[in-house]
Structures are given as structure tokens and as C-alpha cells.
Amino acid sequence: MAKFKYVFKRSGAKVPFKKERTSNAIYRAAVAVGGRDKKTADELADQVIAYLESIFEDDHIPHIEEIQDAVEKILIENGHAKVAKEYILYREERKRKREEASRHASKPSDNIPWAKIWHVLDWAVSHNLHTVEVLNERIKRNEFPHIVHEAENAYEQDISTAAEMIKERINEIKMVFVTGPSSSGKTTTTIKLEQKLKREGYKFVALNVDNYFFDLELHPKDEFGDYDFETPHALDLELINEHLTKLAKGEEVKIPYYDFKTGKRTLDVTPLHLEANEILLIDSLHGLYPDMSASIPDEKKFRLYLEPLLQLKGKDGKYVRWTDIRLIRRMLRDSVQRAYNPKQTLEHWHYVRSSELRNIIPYNVNADYIINSGMPYELPLYAHRMLKYFTEWEKEFKDDPLRTDAYTRAARVKALLESIIPVADDSAVPKDSVLREFIGGSIFKY
Image 1 (cartoon, rainbow, N blue to C red):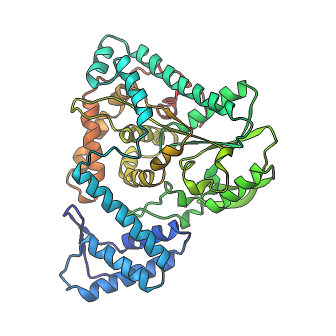
Image 2 (cartoon, helix red, strand yellow):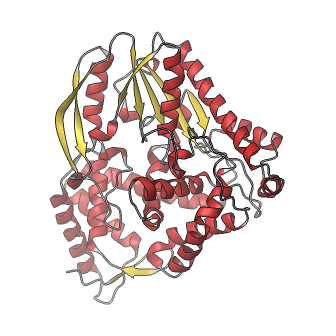
Image 3 (tube, rainbow, N blue to C red):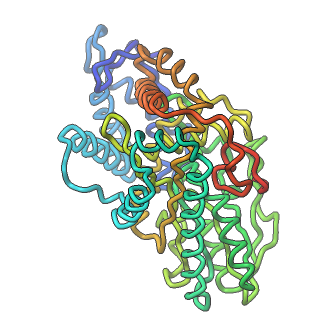
């Protein structure tokens, strides 16, 4: 057992020292470069602790930077150069983002699709839905059903545009990727896109990449010991590429099966091949991640990215954060479809966000088209359903140094929902709406 009882975080908070956090960090870096040896990660973590104990007094409380310096040293000394490089690169990336945030840099983010944002904002202004104040005014005038109609029409138009773009390249495309961060509405969008193209006579075959998950015991964990399904490295990317290459050539492959109840994968289960007139349809968080389909030439792929790119300014003068919309969506979906406590979703969102900022959102610039799945009317529905929970979570996490991320998000969302007139009746929302994927009542089966 380590003699250190506590560690100082960068915020200055003193939190319990846990060897598992060091072991998990090493393992995550190893997974990123193809390694999956948890025993070695544990042994290296022991060496890190032993080294720290050898250079510091018994009453010393190490800083997180001191622990990370020690990890780099031990990795290099033990010949794990590739893992050390990944660990260092990730550490430097996080440092750079912290410095940029602290400077409030005016440089536009490379992660934001500015051209699409301009169109979404223009639409919001022209429909008087660009601020919380005007949204509330329209609700007071009993225009909620009309707001739903306007928003749904804009979303359907986006899907129609994507379908037309696919049709223009139908002779060269072998696969369509529908991708975006968690709870952006990929499943509903995929169904609707397929419906539109099927009516035109095109044929699609779906590939569920969830079946390519490694066994649960091989998954990396977050700092709280929770398994991380959000990272692309939880998937067998090498096998995915092998199968995509064969499918593009018209060869048959046998898709594995992943059992979420047991956390085990069985290889070579379901035969699959593409006929000459069929296109592979893939709904995945990581459809734009380069290693997901590195073996397939760009001309054979159509990449569709979606996110709730809502352009709505709150009473504080700041635009509503898209990640907060997706957080609420996932809470609602997880609680209904997966019997998952919404508070757990909030507690886990830190690594959902961390993974998507690194592995999903930066690649939206490579998309062939971007769909906005954000609906101004969803916030009044959330104000009715979720405000009381965020009020409770803000109080619960306020003084917990291990849950500062959960507290910050809870406080921000609570303030937003408090400012919006709640709407309880969702009957105006179409049964095939993308929002039904999260609030329930959809005609689609998920």
C-alpha cells in the first residue's frame, strides 16, 4: 500500500490517492497504441509509487504533475517508448487546451463547422428562435406546436440534402458512415436517410460496429474505475478495417457478436456480403476517426456528421452549449431504454466529453455533409422534465472535489432550464422525430 494518502489536483483540491488511477492512465495509453496488458500496467503503477516514495518524505502530498512526471520516467526506463509517447502527447494536448482556455483565446476553434453554424444561426434569427427571451415569448403566445413544425422541417431538409448528395455519387460509394458525438441522433437519422434512399430504389446493408467491441475486461477505464466505451480503442479497429476492405471487394465476412450482458465477444458469427447494387450503412460514434476506415479510399465513402448545433443565446449572453443538450438527451434515453440512473450519466460525462473532443469532434471537418439535429423546442420540454434533478445535483456535488465537472455542468444546465418556460405536453412532437429517440414514444425501434 502506498504511503501517500492524498494528491493535489491542478485546481488545488486535495483528494484521496488511488493507485488505480495511475494504473488506468497507463493502460489507456497502452490501449491507444495497441496494447492490452492490464497486469503490466499494474506492475508499472507499482514502480511509479515506489519511485515517488523513494524521493519524497512520508508526509509529502504529491501533485498530479509529479505523478505524471514519474509515469513518463518509469515507462521510458522499462522500454515502453510507444506507450510513453502516447502518454506524453495526451498530457501535452490537455495542457495546451487548459492554457488556451485560461487565455480566452480569440482564435476560432478548428473543431467548429463555421459555415454550417452561420446557416443555423441565420435560420434561428429568421424564425425568432435565437434567444431564450424570444423563445419564451413564442411559447407564451401558444406557438409551441408551430415551433416544433418549423424545427422538424429544417431537420428533414438537411436529411433530404444528404440523400441527394449520396445519389449524386451512388456509382462510386460503397459505404455511408453516419457519425457524431453521443446522443446527436445518429440512429434516427440513419433510419430516415435509409428510408429516403430506399424509396428511390437504392439498397443498403447495415453494419453494427458495437459487435467489434473487445471483451469488457480488456476495455480501458476512467479515473473512477468505470469502463470506457466511448474511446475508439474499445473497438477492434484492425478487424473492422479487414472486414470493410473485403466487403468493398464483394467478399463475404463473418461479423462477430458482442454480448453486452456478459461483456464477451464471439468471433465469426454472422455472414455478411454486399451485392453489386448494395451499399454498407454504418452508424457509429467513430465513423470519421481515421483508423476506423483507413483501408477504404475516400471516394468509396460518404461521411455524414451530425450534432445539435442549436444557435440559442441564454439570458447570460452565452450560447447554449451543444454538449449540455446531448447530456440531457442521453440522461433521458439511458433512463428509459437502459434503466440507467441519470445521475450516473452526469458523473460519467467527463470521459464522454474528453473522448469526443479528442476522437470525434476534431474530424467533423472531413465530413461530406453536416446535419443539425438540434431543436429549439426541446429545451422547454427538458425544463419540465429535468430541472428538479439538476437543482438536486448542483447541491449534491457543490463541495465534492472529485466531482467538480459534474457540479459545473449541473449548475450551468440548472441556470439554463430555470430561464425557459417549461412545456409538459409533447403531443406536438412527431412520432418519427429525432427527439423521440430520447424522450420516448417513437415509431422506430431502437
